[in-house]
Amino acid sequence: MHIVFELEKTDTTESTNLNQKLTKLMETALFTANNIWMMLCTGLVFFMHLGFSFLEIGLTRQKNTINILFKNIFIITAGLLLYYIGGFNLMYPGFEEGDLGLFKFAGFGIAAPEGGMTPEYASGGYTWWTDFLFQGMFAATAATIVSGAVAERVKLGSFFLFTIIYVGLVYPIVGSWQWGGGFLSSLSYGSAEGFYDFAGSSIVHSVGGWAALIAVYLLGPRIGKYTAEGKANAIPGHSMPFTTAGVLILWLGWFGFNGGSQLAMGSAEDVNAIANIYINTNIAAAAGVVVALFLSYIRYGKVELTMTLNGALAGLVAITAEPLMPSVPMAAFIGGIGGLIVVVTVPLLDKLKIDDVVGAIPVHLFAGIWGTIAVVFSNPDATLTAQLTGIVLVGVFVSVASAIVWYALALTLGIRASKEDEINGLDLSECGLEAYPEFSRG
Amino acid sequence: MKKIEAIIRKSKFDEVKKALHDVGVVFFSYWDVTGVGNEKQGHVYRGVVYSTSDIQRRYLSIVVTDEFVDTTVKTILETAKTGNVGDGKVFVTPVEDAYRIRTGENGYNGIN
Image 1 (cartoon, rainbow over the protein chains, first blue to last red):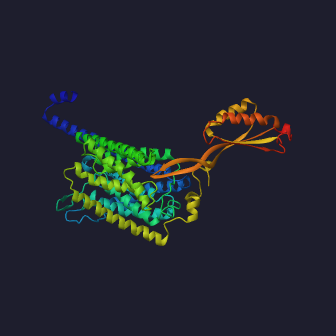
Image 2: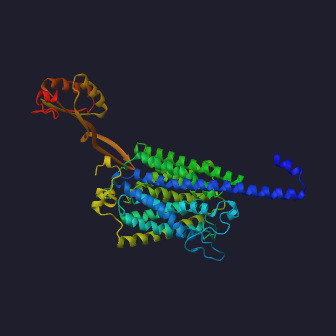
Image 3: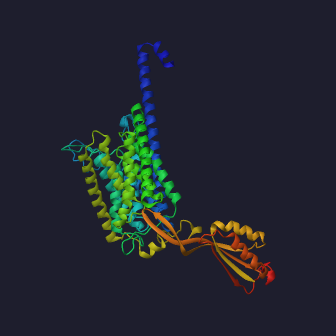
């Protein structure tokens, strides 16, 4: 009312000035709102690294706890630094018209471009550095997924090197194909018209999942995991409270992972979209839990906590490719199938003697593939051809890349801890410390 | 002087401790033990169904002078019982002597 009053009693020149002022004010307000949102989401995605750490610690034996903590702190650190040094420029190289969209590198080191810290950049959606940090938090996730699968027997140094190559090169190259404006985003042949992966069921989760599968295959199972006849033994993790805390933290982090992938919260459309993303993300997780809980009860006669928790994650991974468009029942269906995938494929991997300690392959790879396919159920622009093409191309590239890296490491440094170290625990042999000295059983 | 060793259910420990206290047996050591036996416990972990015969129990070691032996054993037998398989065992063995470190006393005075 105050503003209207002012307008009425001013002449034309003054009202133009006032309009300019108002526009400027609005711009600043939107810029602020957008950046608050993105910074908050960046923090939530960062928090997921604690979730991954807790989940992995909980599902492994206490003698390997410090080794796992090291892997996790290293991954986020390396992820950020490598993303700064070259990853970001590899992932967002600025493909131009006529580029193949396969590979381009915009140079080492980054600095905010002119206007990068003002509302002019990205239509005021975020500042350059906000953008960098949000994307940087994602970058490390792909390697974290591998960490859980190879736990309890991988050599720490070799895992560090793998992380550097995977986060520094492989993930950004794949990311550039889609989010960097590369060939996947504009895929066009036959009925295919663009690949759709909103927040990374394929581009993040499957990328981690494929590498996990290759690594676990090359590493072999933990000592004592399978009998000579090939029967699986249980190697219970040492802390179910840690595991549960980890999954709940990851679930919380997903608010930022999917919600932040809207990349703005400065308009009614954005708010509307984020509300949809939130409800679908949460319903999918809940459906994953319920399905995994009931199926594990039907199959084993007991409600199985770790499968149920994996079910939540599988639901989250599955909805990540398209959390915006599905109706709520559709989101429940997509997440619920995620839960089903966990209960079916965890024992299946055991049959194949693939010793995936935390269930990274079912959760991130299988549910990721499912989620990427499920985009076609709700997004009218997505085509099955394009989705399958994306899944296969991403799968082939990252599998070959990680196979080369792990093979090279196996031939040089070795990728597996010695038998004695594995039995005594990697904490003592590699870190010289016990996680809980006062409760040590050696 | 006898040593009475009892392996009892953890769930019965508080009752046994109180009952022993009531009859005047106020000093003893105990620790948690894992044993094997007939009882099987079903487990499920990440799709692997298995059973273990590992059983968790509490182990009491009580050294008493002769006049306390019968009451101690009787108290444990009464209070540690549920009537189900797995209630535990009590063993009685002779002890030659006992010394109190603080005073150097031995025999009857070493304990009481």
